[in-house]
Length: 281
Length: 281
Image 1 (cartoon, helix red, strand yellow):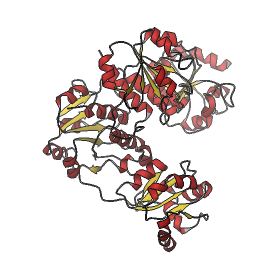
Image 2 (cartoon, chains in turn orange, blue):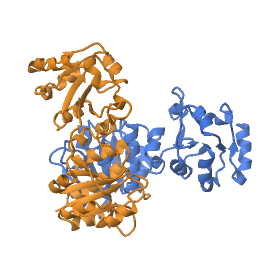
Image 3 (cartoon, helix red, strand yellow):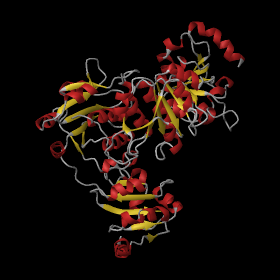
Image 4 (cartoon, chains in turn yellow, orange):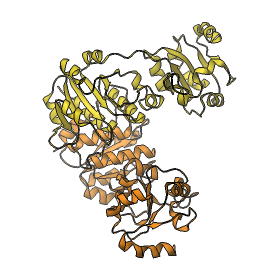
């Protein structure tokens, strides 16, 4: 680590540090990445936030997560030169082969950044600052969760609240699939469940449960009839929202579909709903 | 194969045939599935249509593709009993372990069906019979293509036309990600490109290119202003539609977004557009 700190001095000239020994301890943050995002009390876990590829690394650099280090092949580090100009954490350059030996697999995006986790905002802060939020129940699939954050960022959702049985949006795979948008869209745990929805109601939100059940409002009817704050409740693909969650919401809404009841992926259904809600008055 | 034909006789009682020898030649259709969907002139390729899991197997059974055989663990075969009642192709039952040894990997869905390909409809037939079609350019990613068909089926798209550089919707991974909807939504090649769009125009379609470029109509404006047939042109994530394709379309349309230009996955952008078009008068 002493070397890593020293490296910070070199950073004034924005010169990356070349490392070619895969056993160099300055590369320890990047070792065995398949498990480095796990909680520190789990095997291999260090609880890091890991960004892969120039797009996602850029979003990590712009985020509130404290950067620990960047590692990449020269071509990718050069592409990030402007973004790395003000970075005080060490920036390491190496070959694709050495990178693969350090991280434990071949990484075709050629650049990685590692950051520490940071305290989450509270659900209350998100409720106060948002006009549209997504509230998730049981979205445990990392790719679906990442895709949902990507869609939230693209379609004007201000925050995401995590009910029970959701996975951590900061897992590496979710970070990647979200294109780094889990680092931009604020999220928080919402507890207890579903009674925590009262918090949203207290902030003036209309809570709407997305469910294919008959008798639900169509999304368009919801958007047309709701000018103010909306919290959209989404359940996992397959089981969908629990009965308790649907009962706790102000209204049930559906996407009119021609196919079977569960015919859209949860992140896709969310995108359609976010799109419709973005257009409300 | 002789045994397989004989097995057809047993089928009147809907009893599956138990096989426990992974080298049994009756299982040859299921061998090395990672390549069996390739064209027969490629290594390992047999050009089969392969369905995995009860949902997708059911859709294959209901499709026009000529079934060759079904293989599953007893639990999954039992779940499909009603669907298999009228099937004249052989139905084989075995253990999960034997299945894994035959197909070359562990298959957690527990049931497979294999069918022969069949002639595609013509683009002209699809144009004649459809009100809404998707027209794809350069959608080469199997998962995106599968997801797009899933969304097309859910949101009322009648057919898909494949321009240049699209992958085959009948690849195993696309079949699976589509939830079997590539077997239900008709598709055809559209040639030449983009001049083939004239065919659609001749059938009364308004052709709309989805692109984030400024000056495009919003999707809602398109839907509000178009009561009749619509063909929606979609390009691959990243490059998007080619200049020629956009120029050949009647109109350019966009999804209003808060994020970056390419912030939605192509299948997700398609879902949003299909949703909006489904609501037109």
